[in-house]
Length: 324
Image (cartoon, rainbow, N blue to C red; front, side, top):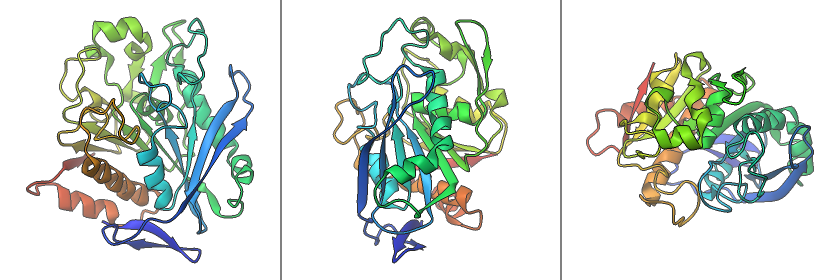
């Protein structure tokens, strides 16, 4: 597998087993006023300290119980990895974050699911302004090369950007926020189909009963842990792979063996929420997603095909890949 590395302003490929990570700069908060939002949109931007023509990766956090992991303060294992491998990583704090302590009586609370997808589109609309705000980034970023990745509720957000329609439980309105400006979309551990949604989830998160994967037509990589199962959401095995099985192609599914909902610890370093803490699993996930991003941002790259060939059918593989 190859990794995107930067040296003297030139992007090139290198084996991650032997490559040292690029030094990363991080800047936060970048704050933008956004109409219709209860609070200003706060973001953290992480990027390689050198290099040009850098692609952009929007990283959407999950919901969860933690005060800070579900905000721009969290998801260090993902943000650090992709920034050190050549991406400008932008992490918004969505309105569902406990750090904001928004009024639970707001109509979209507690998930703020529409607001989250609109955050991501707003960031794309204002990319140039965001980049100019961060010292040392101006003139180094390719604003046409944009990808998005989301975990858990963040996966739901990215699925909406891929065309998944959601029926608003408040008024029955069907919402479609597909975002074709994205060149790549990665959906990690997202909620599955409404047909097998558990009673607890229906009562506490009624919007999850209104998902329609049939309209999710834009290309995406869906990531599922084969041990990611919670009776609060569904008793169905591999429920979080529904975004792949119930949507039209082109799609790929990465199944990570023995992975729970946090895939070894993606939401934060040494997070107490991680029931399957495994740094090797996190590294496997990151490197595999990196190969997919390469293939989507540059179709001439062979990384993804190489990964599929190496994984599928290999004894002791950490996962498998299916595509349609």
